[in-house]
Image (cartoon, rainbow, N blue to C red):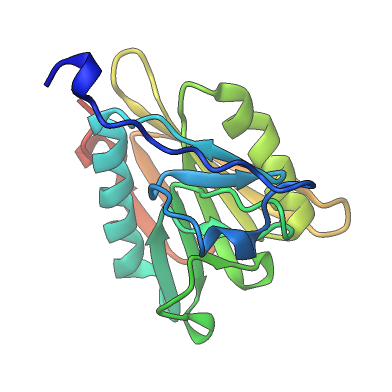
Length: 191
């Protein structure tokens, strides 16, 4: 197929005031589409290690998260026009809806971001948004140039609506919040 023969994508034009979460159900969008302040953000394809790591961490969470449902790339509705998708989202099992494409922050137990090329988003923007929304736990996973994983774990300070760092994990992620977990970071796929 030559460049001239490639199919073109139709990009929907937002209505005056931007899209809302309800508008997304009527649009034919890729799974990597985020609703960010009324606009559509289509995330570029991830590096393979990022996708594999997200999957492997989700499997670890399924094994240790009682009364919870673990999702990859499901949005959290911060407001009607803003629904970012963390790499992993864990919600209370009693709130599970098989048809839902997003969940409100009051049912979220933890949001996990695996560091992308947009470091400001994962280190500053998302943690602030998730904290203001009241999500009790936020984790960020980074990969060093040597392809080693570092996990940063945070817990919400509910008075100030800011995250407090609980630990920086090199090699092993061991915590008791939001559930007991002991995970060999080096054993997860990182090449």
